[in-house]
Image 1 (cartoon, rainbow, N blue to C red):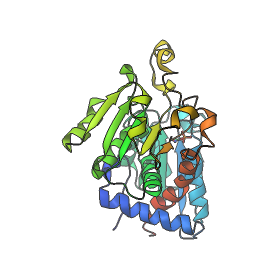
Image 2 (image 1 turned 180 degrees about the vertical axis):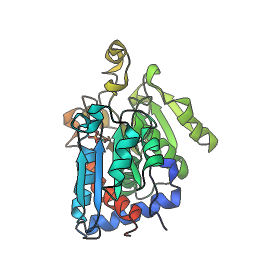
Image 3 (image 1 turned 90 degrees about the vertical axis):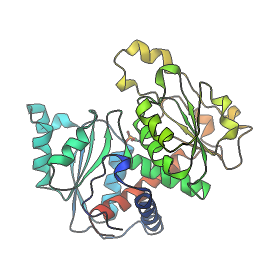
Image 4 (image 1 turned 45 degrees about the vertical axis):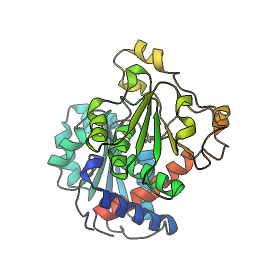
Length: 304
Ligand code: CP
């Protein structure tokens, strides 16, 4: 498998065999997290939008592999604030780094960056569109907790309209004969362009408005935050912000293998009394992000 110099902008840029290759590498990094394979390399992390997990786990991953990290976590401290275009910023950073990890609020910004960059670009989230590296760590977490990615029942709960992690995960899981349980308010349903991936594969999906309608049937309950920053009208956000609050009492009749995942950050959609339940897996999921991002950096830089 050769992923050297490959961009990762949308999860569909890679195929099933390539996902599985990354997951295998991640497993190796989990066993041996400190491997000096990227000693001579520079990783740029350009975050035009806030992040805790994605930026810090990429930086942790790079550091554990001996790479140096440059970049910014607040674009107002970059020359973007003086009016520099994204294309010029990316061309410039290409001169300083071997790989660029970029998050941007505008859908398509990462694709544009990859078209002007002279080094590979990894999309760390572009607006409501895609979050492919979160998807890889979600796949890793699902495989690790279920023993396989095949033939699972997955519930996706919350903001299916604006949740970019949901969009990437649905596209990826379409490769594994998944049955989807889509749980959202009417105004936050999965966009038809994403649903099309399920239909093209002739996979089954169900739509509900209540968690209780599906919770006893699923292997994975993937909770998401309502993405306040994507709403044009804050009143619309106020109407749906408390649609789902998963509470410990709701976990009484779930399948024994069922795990609760969440890309995080959470607001109030998972009560803290769930955190100590055996089903709660979201903090381990965040930890898996380091191994998966080590795998991605190593594969794309041609080091593994
Ligand atoms: N899951 C995720 O993207 O988290 P951050 O916004 O903290 O990076």
